Length: 393
Image 1 (cartoon, one colour):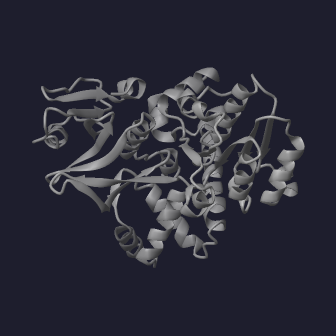
Image 2 (cartoon, rainbow, N blue to C red):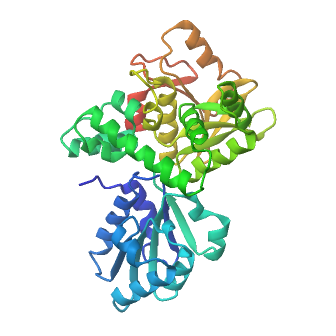
Image 3 (cartoon, helix red, strand yellow):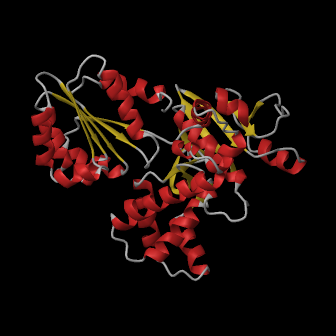
């Protein structure tokens, strides 16, 4: 039982019969396999010529160990005519692009999923000769989480979502302790299997401490050097280039994202200055003791995830030294967005609203907070977090 993720299905549906290889990526347990199942359900209404292999299934990986095995299995189990082939978590098989290339020449529409962005690396996409289209699935946004909770006859409040995030399966567990246990197991699988084992990291203790620091530093500007300096100040000897390499591993596993700062003065993206976000705020909250959760930064992280889900291109905006959390662009429109937990006190109100000073009235200026009171001014629209999560901007 799972809600239909129409947002993603609507993007993929037009490619069902295409000979382009459909690559569906995203962090583990974000719902890629469910989206694949929903695609299969739609296609099965008009044909039974479907072959599905799940490479997270030990029985599958025990008998299919090479790309040639994949081709042979599909050939043996398909019918005549266009065959729809679904290969789930295919990154476990060496040479998988060769299987995809071979199958698409044999009248197959190929769909693959994977939890590592190396599926889209130059090395692999070169082998696919550009004959692919990619889609990234993300953990549930709040509206999806609320809908799934309702389907399970449960409730997911915004407060709960601010802490524990949008990995769907956690809602299937009863207590918070059970949900935390599930998220801890998922976190360990991602860190150990998808990074430490895959990249054969020898300094495992140092890597885990670095990952912990990064995942609890969401919604902040950072550099590899500043992270390395902080770790060295806490007795962890690590080189800056090693931190940069580990950051790239976290990005490749879709655990973190980053956006660049756009300078108004320079009218360009400053690639050396970046802001970091977790794919899901639950990965931050797991690392906090005694309920001292980082709600303020989680709130901004949730707004980031929501804006991405709604199709915005994002950057941090440097307004003559005043940082605006998001320059959000879509359909040739620009939105300047500030995020704060509350602007109830005068100091915070002044800081957040002054960030918009000097911007053109042609662009929309938006402040998102958890306040119920409307703090809108003549040129800045205040949107309560609940309204933003349910209705957008």
